[in-house]
Length: 245
Image (cartoon, rainbow, N blue to C red; front, side, top):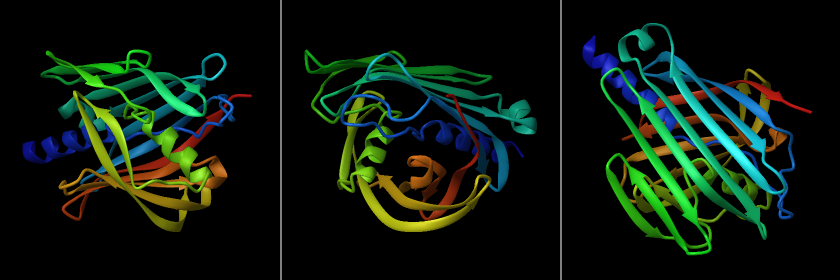
């Protein structure tokens, strides 16, 4: 039982590392109203909890994003874990430029955090994970884990999905290989939806994360799954989407 709960807890942590978002326009304005999306998190064949993602406009061309993953029921009692992510940035000359990113993990035994500060004028990003702190070079196109999917969905809208993206992963710059796996129709809580399936992975890593983006929902991901060595270790399914006028 203890070993099983350890695997379930690990799946919750994996869920927190998945990015969400909505596409942005070249004019620098968010083309959609603020929203909040709810996802059910599954791991090892069990429902582990809920993930809640929100997007808000912040001034002209600014954005704020958040993602919270919390376990439920017996998982919460035994694992006692939660993960929160926050990101903010701006749209400049058609580019998504994050300015801040934070991730906070809390468990019954320990806590950990990641902080990123992007300085585009100086061309650098200050990255801290726990007690480790580094300064990394910053070049156009580099983003944080949450903002990454705004870039992906914008590129899907333009039909210009590249073969790789670079992001700041804790205290390192990492390149992820992107693969467009075509269209797939899914039965979801929001109805039957046509989706584009896109996967990403790090070179040499057996872990693959796959997203199903729904054009009807402005390319909001309606399913996210993570596989390792061909076996599913975590899955998130959309439940509801709330939009503000």
